[in-house]
Image 1 (tube, each protein chain N blue to C red):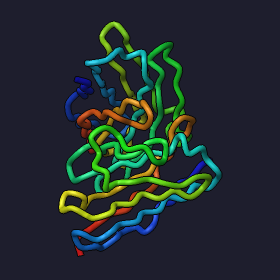
Image 2: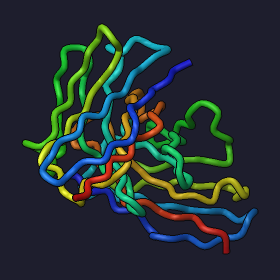
Image 3: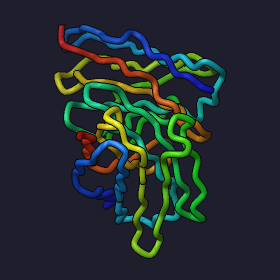
Amino acid sequence: QVQLVQSGAEVKKPGGSVKVSCKASGYTLTRYYMQWVRQAPGQGLEWMGIINPNGGSTSYAQKFQGRVTMTSDTSTSTVYMELSSLRSEDTAVYYCARERSGCDWWGQGTLVTVSS
Amino acid sequence: ELVLTQSPGTLSLSPGERATLSCRASQSISSSYLAWYQQKPGQAPRLLIYGASIRATGIPDRFSGSGSGTDFTLSISRLEPEDFAVYYCQHYGSSPRAFGQGTKVEIK
């Protein structure tokens, strides 16, 4: 059974950074890309970027270039998304999602609240 | 940069009716890489359709997808109470993996 288990909710101050983890089980992490998607309160889905855990290559949405870093640790089957220079508009639920003919498995989401 | 535009923004229908949702791309995309998702409040999205027309595992056959080039459609033949939700299309396979802004299907 495939599972993507994300780290818990975070509260951060403006200007800070947050690192969200996504631990995969039930399959070999390196077989599929992992997307990161966020959803601000009451808003739609926003694509942030993607990582190939097999080698670590990444592609980021232009909006987040310079502020986001996605990494993977194959020894623990975990991918990470770090977002820096946080502002209030970054308050959102952040999801990891396995890409295999679309995103067929999703993490439960991690709420990141940016507030002074 | 690819933009996906979904219409309508909101669809008000009754259970048993047919729903037709549109997703239009700003440039031609391969139908092999068009997906549809359903999202209910407080839940992660769920994959319904990939490859524009292939139902994901466990998805009822009342859901169907079609289209090519720049115009794609998700149809729900007879709405069940559990189908009232927000639906998103996404292009995948190459970056950026854009999402449409969503269509809310609400009970009339």
